[in-house]
Image (cartoon, rainbow, N blue to C red; front, side, top):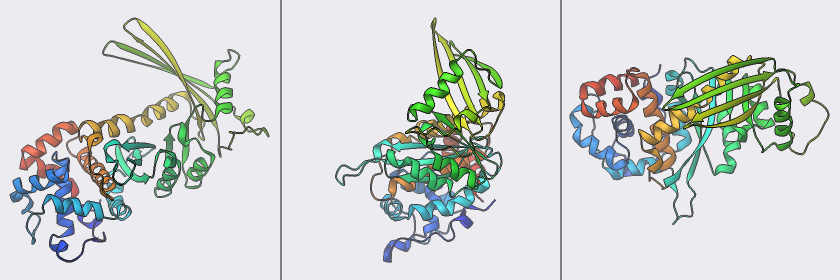
Length: 371
């Protein structure tokens, strides 16, 4: 695995003149370390640097002294987000090189990043998440919710998909996206919903028909906090009737289609029972048990990434709005989370951040993952 310093060696410095008195790598290292240790804003980065100066001088020369919060803010506003993410990519690949069987893609809106004065909408980013390793392996900004589809294709074009199963919600159930994944050596599993109304109705009807015989079924049960959820998974490998010469208005071809899937979730809580069915298309003819594992793996991007960033990093209330600041700070938080994932896996992210902030010794054990 490359060190963080090697990964950033070729990152262009966007600053000019006296603004360069603080070494670029020093500023980024302080910001990343501060983020790992609990800091959430550029003001926090500067305060953390002052309070932990002795720790930083163990491995940084700091010829320009300690950077101010304006220095951090200016740098992240000016830094080219593509170059920043590109330099981190090799380090991210090193951290997540094991267990990338399922790659989940999903979008997230930084709600507080809007800028009314500039007429700028909140930043929307699409993230690729290695579900088994629980690591972020890529991120691309989308101009708005509608461009999440094209942003996802750009992101998938940057990742080695050989042998991976790419999962996504119904927004990404698109023929062009499926073709891109297949061309890059991967397979796909997408939710099928009413944005493809005729196909959705036909698949839903097939699984609802008592005459239909799935190729495989698998049932799981979860019980916690007074809630019992029974999930029945069914798959069919007979897709020939989906590949006819019919031409529905919404029926873009899905390259490599090999399986239809259905999850029936029955939830009982406080004496009330509800049942919801979700339907899927895939290029892999999985049995029901593997299908169940893949569907469950996809939801880790919500539970192990988006939820953690919102709760532990308070990302949902991050207020940086100007220029490239929101996107670059999102990349920084993802990298901090990746580093935290690799250190002391027996301790929660929340506890690791707090202990890193409290103890220089514990912080050194986490920072050792970056060397």
